[in-house]
Length: 147
Image 1 (cartoon, rainbow, N blue to C red):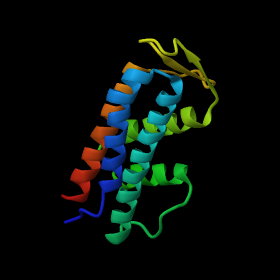
Image 2 (cartoon, rainbow, N blue to C red):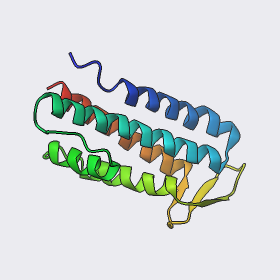
Image 3 (cartoon, one colour):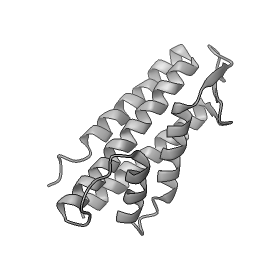
Image 4 (tube, rainbow, N blue to C red):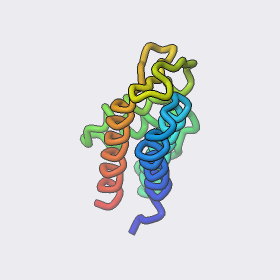
């Protein structure tokens, strides 16, 4: 019914999946890690936009804000009771990581790490965790929209 929703998020997840399991396997640079974080952020943003567009269509909200912080807060409010607080917090953390400066550690090696200026280190294992959380969020949004 609501297939117009969630396709953008799923496409970004596919790209992130490929980057994690193929590109990162051979490249192992912090630039690839940063690119994957950006893809995961994009997947979150598509899903958040889907939630807000659906809520607007169902007249649960009057308008969709332009600022990502306001969108995140409104998504949390609209989907209350769905345990999405941690998802929104991860989204906001990844936005901060993406905007921050960074250095590389162990580049071209198995334990490549993006060391951000905000004190968050992103390793391959961390990316996998982020990826799984974003995937879960998209499933929650999908269920919420199609209930």
